Image 1 (cartoon, rainbow, N blue to C red):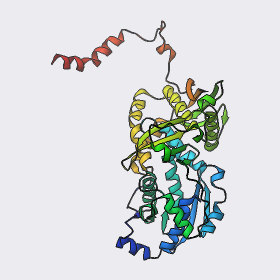
Image 2: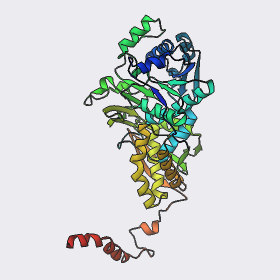
Image 3: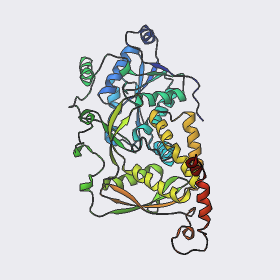
Image 4: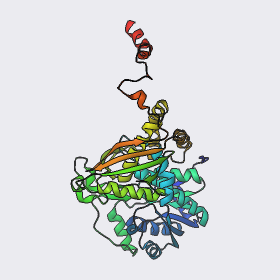
Length: 422
């Protein structure tokens, strides 16, 4: 279990603060920067070198965002002044150790959001902390803004894993306030970036989902442009015939699709492709950010939607009623912890232990029908099933005495009759 034993030093004071001046004048031998190769992180890389006279190690985590977003990063980082660029394949770890535990808990934030962006941040931050330790870096830096949730998720993870490391958050420190400011900064310093027209929204992708927010989506009444979606077909363009898929589970984890055993990342890829083809997993919501404001987000989570529904179907056969009731009562708390960045906090780990204990007999199969944007459970079976047809039947049976229900109802109504008689 990881425990938070101290608070990481977070460098985010106002620029004119004497504390910042003192910190910036101190020697920073090496900084690990979360790097994407885009405008923001290219500017941040140069800014860090100017402010700290530091050796910058650029880091990019491959969490399934696609090869196009990873191409040429090493050259871009070197041209911008990084001493090295590390691109680490975290896809299997991300799905196995982060997505699957979250799916075992059936985590859904505010009734709709399957937490695709939230769950990617702790695996990225964990890898950054490990790299910083390996290369002897004194600090890690990120490009998250002071308005969003990601700053909290990155920094809480770092605090839990290595309280001694400094955290540098340029968007909370510098006087750049917009994309135009960043473009001007890049031109002044000959930073090699490709200045393209600003997208009408921001996008973030990983193996579990794609998110869209900001720009034109800040009007919660405006319908998203259908051309925006990169992954899923629209229901109107989805096939006119349904597809059936069978997901097999062992102890709460999906292990096979249509009888073929697959490793976690490959399994998620398979159900993503099936769901995307049939337009499954699009949602459009207004959520409550941890920092206090409401935010409109549009998400594509095709595979996650299928796995969530299939898991609940197998649980419906295999979980005891009271275990299910108590676990379900904890879903909002678990989801909130993931959303707010407390993945490595003891309370999330304690909830996970309860969840995983409940999953010991959650083994079996669920059959789903994918059609025109919907995933519907149409069958479930399990060797661990608690479902007894001889008890459940509405036909004649010899195992259940219906007269027993009279005393049961009378005892259940005792307090109600007492209250009514008062």
